[in-house]
Image 1 (spheres, rainbow, N blue to C red):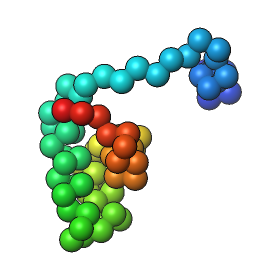
Image 2 (image 1 turned 90 degrees about the horizontal axis):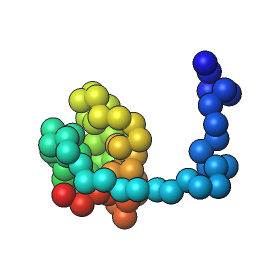
Image 3 (image 1 turned 135 degrees about the vertical axis):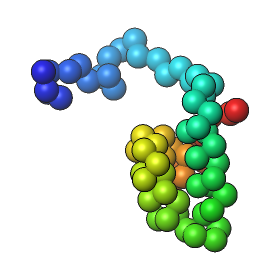
Length: 73
């Protein structure tokens, strides 16, 4: 199976977005550390830190670039 065989979820008429509270405390702590470091180290270094710590790219981008999309803890 490749990406072309998968249904396009954006085109599915009954798709809903559900937010879930984070259950991964480690990822939450890492994201919080990265966010706290932005004023001193910058966005690039914060992103590099999260990548080094194996935080999924989708989570890192949401947390660092789109603060309104951060999950509540």
